[in-house]
Amino acid sequence: MDDVTPEQLRDAMWRRATRSGDAGDCLEVAPLPGGRVGIRDSEHPEVGPFVVSGSVWRAFVDGARKGEFDF
Image 1 (tube, helix red, strand yellow):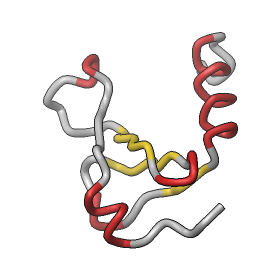
Image 2 (cartoon, helix red, strand yellow):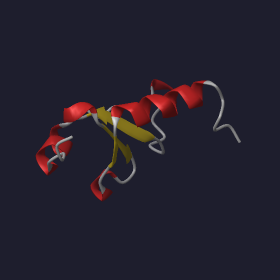
Image 3 (cartoon, one colour):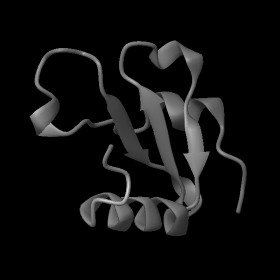
Image 4 (cartoon, rainbow, N blue to C red):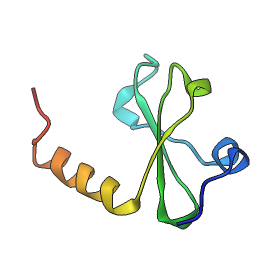
């Protein structure tokens, strides 16, 4: 996969879950070129995102739906 450029990260369509409300303490995700997914802290977007492959993202979402990360 190609590296994601700073411009692509800046221009990405970042979104957060509607359940997170306006508190600001949530994660944002964005689809990126090459099938990657960016994940960032909505309170500190300047820190930069963590970028994962689409398959890693899908595995995480599947696990979250199944409650694998519940505390």
